[in-house]
Image (cartoon, rainbow, N blue to C red):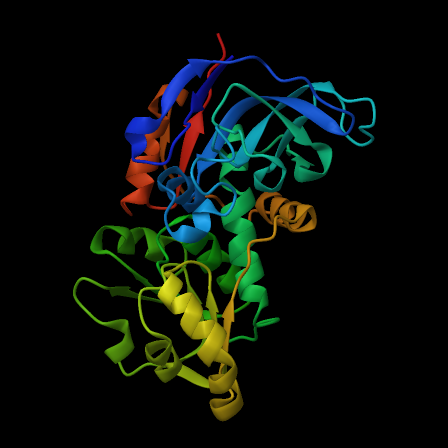
Length: 324
């Protein structure tokens, strides 16, 4: 089979399309013939080994030679201990917790990482959901159930996590303000944003507005900036950002919470099959829809990762895997 492999940290130049052996499923694994896999920021980070946390699996060289976590495809074979999935099932899921390997024609994964794909959902749509939509859902849940009129700011709203977060927050009756670049604002309005802020023209910290919740996908300001625009008893949730901001939240967050009643939290990514299934139901009911900016072929993985890593993507970037 063909797979995009890397054996050292670096730029997209270290990625190579190679022929490798098709894996064989172990007891509780299934072999998936991949039809689509989406690109996430973790692929960009793990490729470069930056920030430092991206090297925890392997300090000098990558632990996993094939990136790609969010897959969708058809089950080709199953291990002897598999109980809930059959050959021929169309499935999707986040496989980051059981070995990665999505940028390939086939992958073996634990059955517990996979959900059954609805017939109304394309493989590209299914691959766009697992990590980004689950992060959005889990981040918004830090606030609990919304009430009509609650105000939410999403910083970095135009990417994969942000576009799902806009739709989920609107389902709960929130008033949503989105921050991103000029080219993404019309798309954000189209999916429900009540207000948009072009960060190239306006500083969202100095608009005079405050918010009940901030979902921060980029983490590019200080903890004190975020505290300043949080309402009393408001919640800030960091989904992505710098090590500096992580340190601020870990050490200063509890103090800010105690002194000002404003919660400062970091969301730890936790793949969750129940959340996948819940989001699948929202899709089937027409309540959320993956925003897919571009699709690439397997041979174009390097180009796709570069495009996402440079911050250009409006929503998700998906690799469509063709089988000859």
